[in-house]
Length: 294
Length: 192
Image (cartoon, helix red, strand yellow):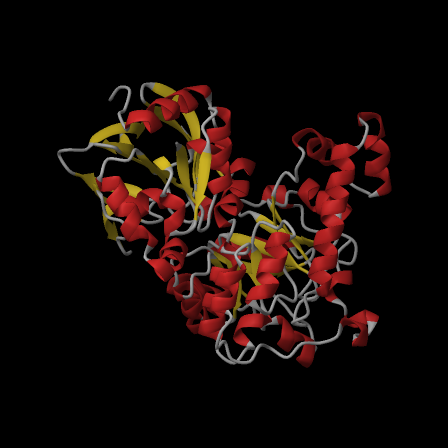
């Protein structure tokens, strides 16, 4: 007897990615570099976040050709981004045999009220969140993995830190709450009661939680790991840096050895130039990708 | 003495949870010096290519191989089985101490991943197969210990067990009882 795509199986793949680095790639060549550098998975997208930010326009799911090319070029899991609420892009990614779908605020949203109902799609989903309420809403819709949104394409880790801390505080509040106040918390954070109750009972988020958005150096990755995330996504930080291969390998080793400063020093030597960062305060409110998602 | 759990990447904390349930102390293994005070070893699921890359900085797998060849009870699940196998189709062998040929992701991609009813040491349980490796063949010294339908999904040779699935995501009592015994002496309770 075999049953495919149960929630346990969807969540299970995320469990296997723990302690790893998931790297943004725009073509097969970058995917191969990522795999050789020790990435646990690659994320196929049309343009990396820093370029989406610089060039503007509507950012959509990658072309079918690019996705197919990336799938054919590596043996590690391949993820791809769909626009928020664009369930047809998700259906297409499912049909293409993608291993994980990222319903991502980095792309231009397709629906200003609704996210995708993720239970109906065989492929597991990862969703961004800025706080525990948003994480619970996505889990309620069927997300099998959460990532902090951070502020993608900035090379600035401050938003990822803010979201991770906010998530931890939110989880702790639910864990330590009196059982009688769980419904009131659910109402306050606009979260499904069942997910809040599960966090209270199991004392943890029901799915794996990675950090994303602004991680550019081995130290940034280690910082996020020490703050308690399960692994990291690195987008523009690798292929916008001076020496992508060296930097990718260094971030992989730093993520494993996040609590070992000597190793962090060692891997941070002779890395070349990191990507140029942006100050979050200099961004116009409308330029903040983390605001997307409801 | 503690059980070492390879902690380069992957679902190692799920194995730690199993060890806590059987009251066995554990040591996370990230470098050679972590191997000093262990009497048994678990290699978890995750991405084998990633683990191979990370271990290279100090050739951790060479020391692990010596320990396994000296008779240390060792369990590998999923990627852990790939690390142990002598031959990997479309992949690279690494620790190479289990007389088997495995193929990575041979049950398909994530959409084909499944929960399956496994006969593991004469007990049937639903276990997760996640982009699982397939046991293509094995040597005469190897005993099958887990089957799904007629297909071998778990094997035992001397002090080593390799499973293509994830008992640590289920932690049923039969598995935990088996694990406790196996980590003591590397023997398998019964064979199929």
